[in-house]
Image (cartoon, rainbow, N blue to C red; front, side, top):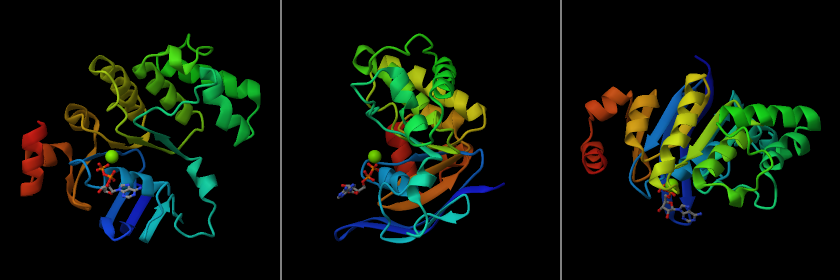
Length: 243
Ligand code: ADP
Ligand code: MG
């Protein structure tokens, strides 16, 4: 299997606080990797290092074989291939749904407006919101906004999708509709890295589970291995609190 993201000896410090410690990990084409762990363990920082939203203190991150930590390489160009979905949707409030979705394809990728709009409409069907093209974000529920945010990321035709707690800000009744869209993407073969506290989803949809604590990857494995037979006490302790 081809490696999409390869992380070698990654360390990240904020001042004197080392929040990622010698992280080594490889994400392969088509894999769904779910990162779990207690709050403050470094999950978001790890995810944000993958597309250089956080700049590593040391170590190397390769994306599709290119070292993105090498300043010679154009991170903006590579970031186009890495979709990101945040906890708080981050839609542009002053733009309609269709403009939110087509902005980057038109501005950044110089896509033809008609083509971008027609693909956006397809994506709106994919996320189950075919009639919301002309709506504004504030008129939508949190679950709908997050599905639009997913469509917006997909509009750039990324090779990998990064999700940082995409359902944590949602009312409980809206969590399922967002997870369903993510599950569908996974089934279609999208490579995904997902930070989440939704353990049922992690177990069902994840190919690999990564457990982080204190800036380390404590263990990783299949869902059966990590949930069914955790090796480390810290993993057992965490799972006993969340399951
Ligand atoms: P998680 O996502 O697992 O909750 P984070 O990656 O957000 O963990 O944070 C890991 C540690 O890094 C925490 O101690 C947090 O306070 C610290 N941290 C995260 N972002 C910053 C930042 N921009 N500046 C300083 N400290 C940060
Ligand atoms: Mg976080």
